[in-house]
Amino acid sequence: MDIQEFRGQIDLIDDELVRLFCQRMNVAAQIADYKKEHGLPILVPSREREKLKDVSQKAGPEMENYTRVLYSMLFELSRSYQSKRSGEQSPLYHTIKDAIENTPKLFPQSPMVACQGVEGAYSQIACEKIFKSPFIMYFKNFESVFNAIDQGLCQYGILPIENSTAGSVKKVYDLMISHNFSIVRTFRLKIDHNLLAKPGVKVNEIKEIYSHEQALNQCGEFLQSLPGVNVIPVANTAVAAEMVASSDRRDVAALSSRACAELYGLENLASSVQDKGNNRTRFICISKKMEIYPGSDKTSIMMILNHRPGALYKVLARMYTLGINVTKLESRPIPDREFEFMFYFDLETSIYSEEFVQLMCELDELCEEFKYLGSYTEVV
Image (cartoon, helix red, strand yellow):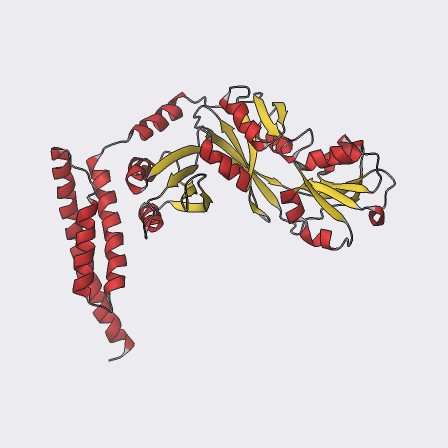
């Protein structure tokens, strides 16, 4: 037999598989109707375990694992179809729907906003890109920004969440676990780090360089070209510039923004010293109240999964089944819970899509705990 004959056999088998798949899904629909009528849950874990064991044994040793994967996906498709057919909408969906209806159609122009650092910080620059004329309050650390939102001191807060070079801002992810908030917008800011020092100082005079840890990581190659220079992490890039300006020493410098050079009367000794030219930091804008503005096409969620093999696979399979694109997946250890992790997902799907509605109604059954962080537009 040649390749075309083999392919012909595959085509015939596929025709039968499609017919049987549709037949199976039709029976699943009848089961969904029965469960709805009798108040039964869609997910019955014991039935799935028994079925997986049965089909795996029937497939034989060589095909056992392949069959298990195939039927795990079939179960996800079946449950998703049953959930859709039942038409039940979760309390979360109604909360989201109310937020969509009650959020103003225009994004606020001049609110009170919390930023970490001091004047000239990249958080401030991002804030001024997101809002037209914000009133900014500065806070010492990220936790204080969350607290300002929790306590109603500020309506919004701006926080860096990831950088294209240095990766995720882990401290912010850890704080997200313990605070209640809603993401209302995100922004990707082009980051240019510059070596700032007092006027008249030469690069070869520098003995210490201050900056935020993320900025130092983003400028590793440049710092390696300065042998003998001591690198000191500080709370913020703008704080670093302020420290240099207020210091009595002339052998110190900061890695900071161009705006900070003018703001603190410093001289730019070297421009754009980050390792990669396309260096961007993604900032989230958070609020205490859930706000969902028109056109939101990104959603963030957090969940704790059961500590069992395949738990994460089931979540990703359900999203794949619904055609929802996962643009980011991050895991962070949960404080005081040994070897347990919180998973953070960024999803790409319109809040008006049928798939979004279905996912919000199905997520509770896929995990131990689930937290909806908000739906929003990303400004570029």
